[in-house]
Image (tube, rainbow, N blue to C red; front, side, top):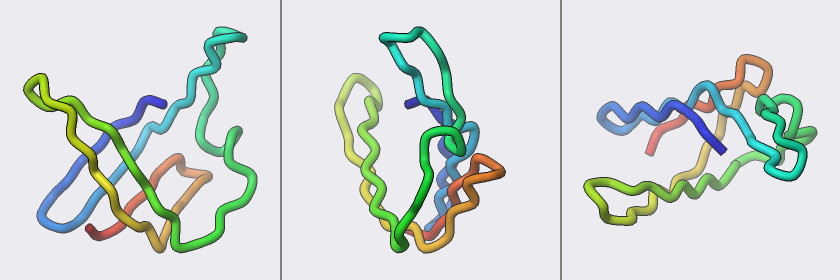
Length: 74
């Protein structure tokens, strides 16, 4: 998965979410992969910051799949 991740104060905004299927060498938008969501949604993101692995874990209560965005508070 690739995405744009912005964090400001206690708000997280994830946009341009794209999934890559290595076997078929194809990219898919979030709306093509996710068919049903049960809220609240638990999100776990692995990040590499300055060479160190970090985890960002939070829960989203609002998700806009068709605009390919996820916005929530930490």
